[in-house]
Image (cartoon, rainbow, N blue to C red; front, side, top):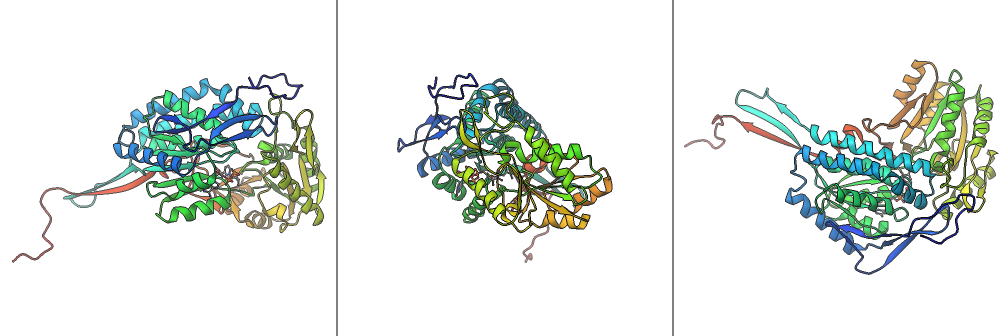
Length: 507
Ligand code: NAD
């Protein structure tokens, strides 16, 4: 057991230090350099994990293992039934290990334990859905090309995929990618964020237990440079599937262009919820509060701005502020906590700078606007914050603040609401609240975002594709569209009988 002091109000024994090693070709290995890095809990301050620090050598070894495994056909040519059997077993194992995995997820990320349990347990369904796709992959057949011709379009695994993930939903986001890549028959190299490496390794243990052949899934620990950079540029990699910031997404896209790899990018967002006067205002206010504080706003889908009709703006803000005061911010290990810690002190300072800048530019901080101290845990927390009188050109209205900070803007007409929604470099998601179905549908069709929620927020399903317009990304994740990203298309054109006339003139 770890002997560090934790919040005396929550009697809790911390798990032993998690020692992480790379998974390369089915074996757990240290770095050749012998170097390691540590992750401190953002909420409790103790060291949660010590991980092998990968360099170019480890990234290259993992890529070589994935390449060899792919070319051997052990997985890429396995039947859909064989692949699905392994994926279903992984789903069962995830469910059997929810508590163990969720605890490390919470300690490394700072998210509430109830949320971690929901994300880890919920991820099992992504694995089950991907298993169903493994058995139902098919292409097209063309039977109308003439009596002596037939064409079939095959779907094949794209090859070796580099999967690079962020710290905000380590287990969930990996499960939005990995089972789909495996269902397609790809082999992979995974690099989790240096801030939350351990639950990816725990999943690696489950993959071995489920019988995934050696080399099919490799995990390398370390920083974006050099590990992620090698994974994005190496010639033996066929595709990079990345979730993270837009800035790093652009770097990866440039690195991958050297060998014209396929790149799928899930990036940032500045997602609005638009509230019309005829909406169910109680439900909308609750969804706004959920949308902005979930994961302390450190969420690509954070609804960090609302665009509310001017006739109801004041009343709606009162409701949002009243609900905000009731949300339980606090110790992530407390089962009743809804909102936990900020990932790093530097990020907390960045959030605070945005708020101070907005105030200095004339916006009103109607609620919060400062660091939050949780008794016994220090100040790596931020207050629920609502900012009104926001000008659409202010950084707080345009940038991904990634904190529990809501910017409020107003509109008069649907055209104006659509214009404000689309006046963004991002295009991940948007929401509309109205009891008029025509208003909702018109908004949904005109919003330049990959997802539109109507009278709800952040409901998602393994079946429904997710991804962004504009600088929120390219390609799609989950659903059949997400699965298709990991498939290559091959056309086979066949002649029936000896009906081909010679191209070279006969003598
Ligand atoms: P980040 O871009 O800093 O890091 C993401 C991953 O990229 C990490 O594993 C990191 O080590 C790696 N990396 C960093 N530099 C690299 C490089 N040069 N080459 C290759 N890999 C490199 O993002 P983050 O701070 O971990 O996560 C937060 C961001 O992720 C936010 O912008 C958020 O919106 C975004 N995100 C998007 C989605 C989505 O589905 N659209 C979901 C979650 C998070």
